[in-house]
Amino acid sequence: MPKTVRPYNEWLLHQLRDPKKAIEYLNGILEDAPELFPKALAKVSLASEASSLSHDAGAQPVTLDPADEGEVDSNFNTVTGVLQTLGLRLTVGSARAGKVQQAQAKAA
Image 1 (tube, helix red, strand yellow):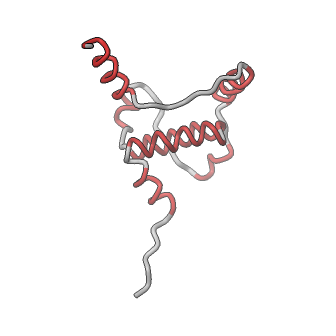
Image 2 (tube, rainbow, N blue to C red):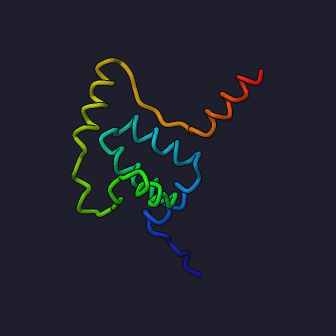
């Protein structure tokens, strides 16, 4: 019986539905190829079906058009360049986990 193969983008979007995997993916992009972060964030947004959240926030609709692969957000490149110059880096973490930890610290 032949093994079915799922296209990479479909597999990736499925994987990125898990918040922990999405955080690892985004941090990996930030570390290895920060210029790709806007595209990676778009994929995570698409995977989490957060397009309505983006719309509510006034963001432009997310597209994953292969023709856009060459475009890079110059503002983001400026931010990451300044951070690198300062010896700093940007990371992604769960905002929900931080609120829980803050609440636990206040209770203690």
